[in-house]
Length: 80
Image 1 (cartoon, rainbow, N blue to C red):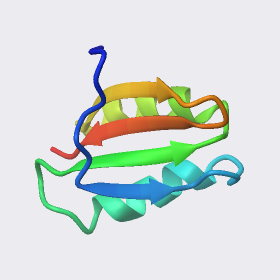
Image 2 (cartoon, helix red, strand yellow; image 1 turned 120 degrees about the vertical axis):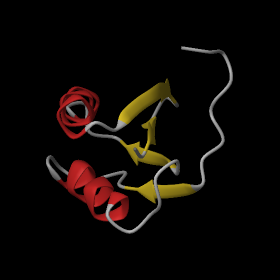
Image 3 (cartoon, one colour; image 1 turned 45 degrees about the vertical axis):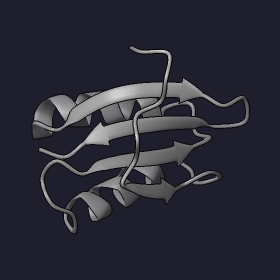
Image 4 (tube, helix red, strand yellow; image 1 turned 180 degrees about the horizontal axis):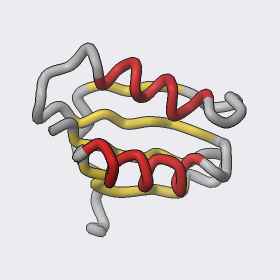
């Protein structure tokens, strides 16, 4: 993963949501955007990274990068 964060087209703020809230919020947004869109999911739930990586593999979407912001993570997903 690179040093710079990808440019996000859309941000989904799920900070403070418990599992599986952040992933469900992301999936809802994925359904409403075009292929090629980069979504930044913000989550403070420690399980989100593993759940999102598994979902990306299964759904064919691409987890681009995970950035630790201290109090939350920014997870970048490219919609396929």
